[in-house]
Length: 245
Image 1: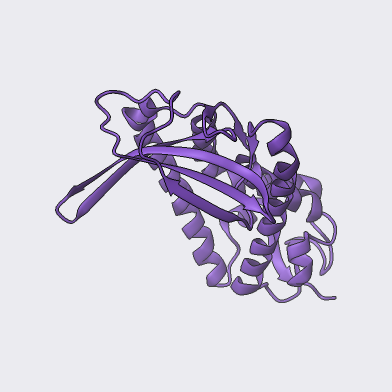
Image 2: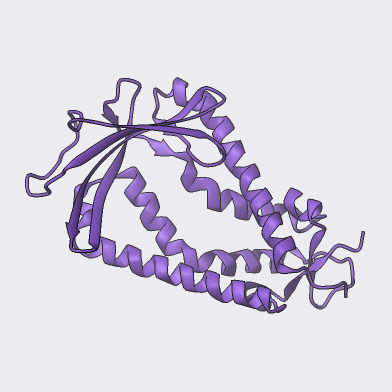
């Protein structure tokens, strides 16, 4: 069995693959943003962001009278001069001694700065990243893995035998499971932004699910740093090793 792939090698491969997926989504947004009248947007990847404060929220945003909004801003994202996203954020900033609290809602905006119902391609970043790794790990690996000389192997296989499809599917199912609840909640909040989501149990559920995903990330991170297989590799019988060629 080849030498185990180290933390930095795997981290750089992870970032490379993430940038590839993010730039692909932005490329789609460059075309879809103007064709959809800003209803399809993306702000992931490498872009330029410009924001300006508004004196008042634009018409069309239902703000509860008791919310006490005291700031609003207009932000645009572009890559190479092509707009890919345009949002309006309305929120409340409060300070109690040294403690500051911010609650805000962000909605999509058209070219005139008016709120619209839209869809952010950014929510697809995680699923497409997993799909890229799932489809490529059965061969020579994703672009990031190839550049960093990392191969995913079956523990019970040979030195250059990729895992079978069943093991790969199990690996990425377990990999995605801790983050699935927070992803679904974020997906819903992105489709239906509302000040009502800032109250009640939604925030508590979102914080709890995000904490679960964070703990799973830290657990996997510590395992990799200590030279061990992460929990999703243990479950699937796979291991990340340095490529022999």
